[in-house]
Image (cartoon, rainbow over the protein chains, first blue to last red):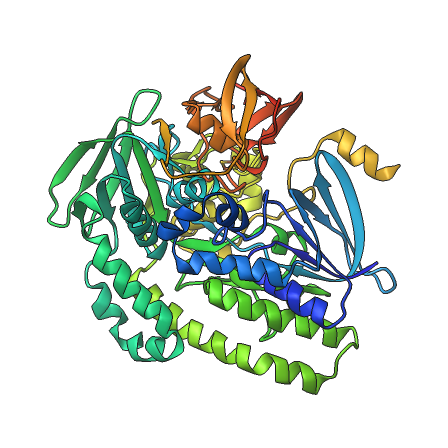
Length: 463
Length: 96
Ligand code: FES
């Protein structure tokens, strides 16, 4: 039995692992991605070794991921390991964690589990978002880090938020042409956020300075930059050909495009905290669910901790800090350190987290999450897997008590992605249709296996 | 949409895979999904209900739009699997 199983090798998981190791915990990291770093530091070790020239446009913050990975290098880590079940807590055996690696299922028991599964981009259900050629902004950044590839032809970036600005500046620095940026941030961002600027500057000075540099590049990173854009639609016959949108003064436009990347912020990856039935609440400021955690990352599920963006979006620096705090708290829970030592270790990180929360208030005010998803057009696809449209959901909204019953009525959430892509949209559409608060509408119940597995994989486990 | 590789120097080794019977060149460190895009493939599957063409959307393991058959195993998420020399990939254009 392991003392601690950490799921996810991004900033939260890696920093937690380094701390856990230093405190003598027998730790295992399971990470689904091909290499460590999470999304933010994706592929950083390989890029540093094989394509060091690319660090020039990926940036200094990206290179920091290497230091993090090194600090955790003494910890047993499995890449390509997809966790699909976390069993109930038992008094003598802890929790069983089950994952698949190279098509084979494996299991381990853990006294404590730390979910460091990070964020995903909020799905942006616009008309035509299922067309080939339409991706997320994060997807373009991912393949840039992973393979140094970028879309040829007319590239349009659309949406709002720091990641969009970051990719635009990385493309600009790498000499990759962007045809147009369609910025959907409601006008008046800096005015809305001004109240939080002093605190954010104290709490996260580096991030504020970086934001300023990004803003300077952003305006000239594309051939055209449109602000206050609404009503984005993707059109094409079998693949994206045209992007339509409405500008800030209400004039409709149409541009030819080969690639459209969407981004409306990030939300906690809900799957594993939901799987262990941790209590969640709706965060109205970020318009998403997040697990309810205490100050040290403990969830309501016994022996399950959450660190990093999976517990609420606060960014990479906060993820590192919360990982260390959670690991020290696990050590306290297992009787390896005294409370005084945990408190001493946690104090500077709790301070950092406060600063990062101030920064987040600033960013949330500047880039508010989209408020139109519940009112999206009837014909637009909500569930990509089962091709369920907003109209299909509205038709049964009166009869469906919540997302789980709706699933049975419409098949939304029953495809291979298991509701990852439609979960939050379904909650928003139902909330609007039923005139209820999203928090009261709730979310899909996530059952094991949390990722599709073959019968052979399950069978191998029993042997 | 087709993808191009940055011109910068790389020490990544060349890797060859077979996709739907054709040999494509990739690089060590690519995921299968990235290698497919770099080789000019885009719509690699069809949706379950209406059979419309689909392409990888998230590149991080959440959307399942990148499902392909790899070395005989169906429904693998191409964006999570690193390429290996000699890998045999088949796109799933027929079923969901
Ligand atoms: S592209 Fe989304 S899961 Fe692979």
